[in-house]
Amino acid sequence: MSSFDHPLTTRFDESDCMLVFKDAKVPWEKVIVHDNPGLSRNIYIETAAHVISNHQSNVRFGAKLRFMLGVASLVTRFTGARDIPVVRETLGRLAAMEAGYQAMIDGQIEACQPFDNGFMVFNRRYLYAAIHWAMENHSQLIDIMRELMGGGHFQFPASIDVLEDPELRELFETFWTAGEFAAVDRMKLFKLAWDLVGSDHASRATSYEKFFVGPAFAVRNYNFINAPWDDLHAAVEGFMGTYGSGDGAAAPASGQGSG
Ligand SMILES: Cc1cc2nc3c(=O)[nH]c(=O)nc-3n(C[C@H](O)[C@H](O)[C@H](O)COP(=O)(O)OP(=O)(O)OC[C@H]3O[C@@H](n4cnc5c(N)ncnc54)[C@H](O)[C@@H]3O)c2cc1C
Image (cartoon, rainbow, N blue to C red; front, side, top):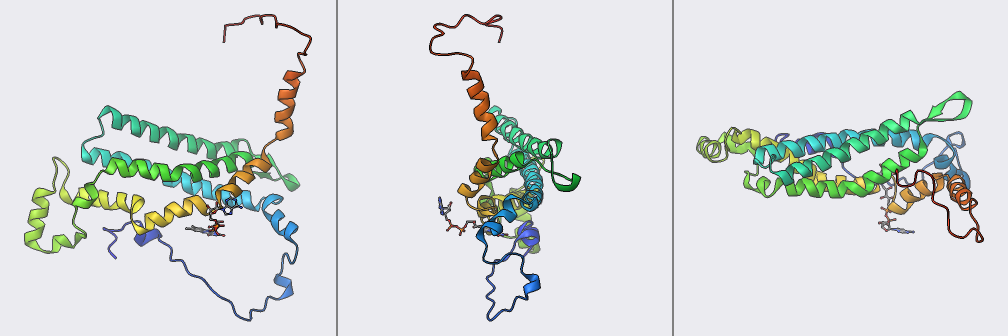
């Protein structure tokens, strides 16, 4: 497979396989948890393991998002659509999403929490919120990129082998060059964008971003169990405690209307 035609697949695709161990012996000294569902579950909840490994996942997604934004912008430059107001607006929206996500990563560090023995760990709530954000938004982002690409990708030859035939090469370089953008450069960018959006590798990655931490209900459960419900309830109950059924109409607050 040519790295020009599949620049991401050739570097990053994983092949999935199932290993079946028959008559496997696990020595007792290698057993961490056995017949104990509660302890098995708490590896994820009460230790920092899940948080530490998934902060890495967030940083990985942040790098990918940044790359996606760069590709989206270059694609619109190559199609000539970049300065159309509605396309700029789409890029602005993507840029806001990307910046917001990077802030979620920085926030996990900025608002880190004390852990055992004087160590600190990334902020759990912000971490699980970022995982949830990525899980919910990746497919939509891919779809926006697909829309920005239009049908451009399908107008290119299937492979860069086209350059090996002198006659085809001349045709390609003549008719696929657009303004200041050479045919080969356009093809290179569109092949890269397609490997991010539409190839087998891209499709697997779309499932990956939905599921690698677990199904959606599990990701939401991590957000549920880490939310400070008592504090949230107390804030509302504290406010409700400032008035009663016999208070009648509330007096206007001083400074009302100033925001
Ligand atoms: C590309 C890819 C890479 C992966 N990499 C890894 C990895 O590196 N390490 C790893 O450990 N795992 C990995 N996973 C596995 C991942 O953790 C599981 O896919 C995920 O937990 C979902 O489980 P499942 O695939 O068995 O789906 P199922 O449990 O069959 O679920 C299918 C669908 O039904 C829904 N569903 C199922 N049960 C319920 C329920 N009780 N309530 C509501 N909805 C429900 C799910 O939300 C989901 O949409 C990967 C998955 C993919 C797709």
